Image (tube, rainbow, N blue to C red; front, side):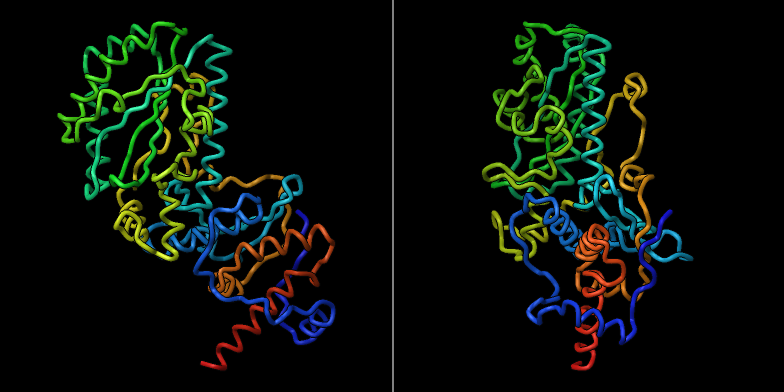
Length: 399
């Protein structure tokens, strides 16, 4: 394993040398970010945005694991470390805990969701190619209103799903359709009628049936009955249940594709008046009311209510049958590339300043550019550290 950077520079001579080469303008503020704009599309800005959102989530949910994500050390006998993947040209933090939460951590959500999407795509491809199977997309939703707690709605949805699948006639219809396996995805949005949790289920069939739509009305009536018996508002015959052939049926599905519809619902932008949870987290910076509610309070409600829910749930034995390796969200979040090389270690004091000024992401980007430019120990990284130290010392003197 190669090492390109040593300990953090602190000497006055090092400061002078770096300032002489390329001093940082005084206008380059290190103030803590309190406001950001709509999620950028550029990869670099996306990471900045995710780190800032992670800090905001930790602030609003201090008792959850996200508060320690990419901060608290795994091995307390070792320093935090930065490693670099030459193929991806990306640096990342090592020897830090990862919460693995796809619901309340934007950083882990991106990594885990992408890997889940890859798993799902691989599974669907194998089902179709190896087993000559077909796939239907079943959507189940229900009526809801402002003021209904998300926890209550999630509990009701869970009960309704159980009742629906245990109904003899539902089981008979699924058998007639040739359904062998199911993959269930959960999505939650918030709009003018409050929280809206709902499921998208992939029905894996032994073959495609042209007459599958003839079952929709009967299944809709059975779904309505399951909802009302579970304490939920009755969905309509038109919107409560939808069954499609798994192609790009609506704008909602066509935007993401079948696999992405299931695995990325929590990180895509809300449609129209519908906001995703991460939209609410974004809005919590300024915290102006949406539909009469503070985004920060809604995020806190979401973070507590969604705990323990699974984003994607495969039918029993399906992953093994399709030869998809079983991994938890935490394991996916902790995966690091074996080819990564070590760039440098970071001591506790410097890391605390990077966290205080919300510069963990900037630190990674500086290291990436320094490595590519061959600036070992005298590039942007050192200038950033010196600037942070000087800024902090000035604040201490003024306090």
